[in-house]
Length: 212
Image 1 (cartoon, rainbow, N blue to C red):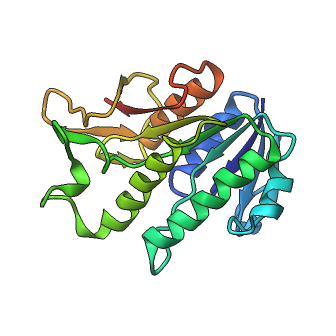
Image 2: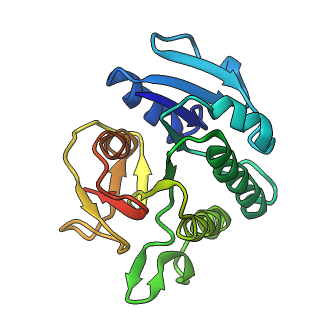
């Protein structure tokens, strides 16, 4: 499959890139700093400015799917930057005629009690709040999107580099935990869940989540 991956040098994006290439997909990595990615079989690296919707649309054209690992973590106004970037990505994907958009989401918008999302609780870490709100904004925008076949994948509360086991649980809008009360997933297994969804869609125009 010919995939456009936005944010391939990021924390989760790099894991998605490795998983997609390992499955034999042709990946165009759209990144702000192309020099960060070494040449690999199946990989085309393209420098881009996500905020330039018209140019981005031309770069996305001809792909079968877009995977967005975009976020505003490094920006001063994370939520505002995140929102502008997501608007451009959604618009460019639509403009390019790419039918599918899969987005990396956050755990903050998952419910910890009926009607209560993690990001709205006093315990939610302040340093991650702006990006969590940006991810929640993204989900709300996608839920109003009726042209694209979109999917939004939320990780567990803790996502970090680890092993690729291929063994995890799939959830919905609730924050799931294991028997020890922990909510964890490795970047590698998050990538497995995302690429599984790409290859065999089962969450069309839905958010789903992944956890051990």
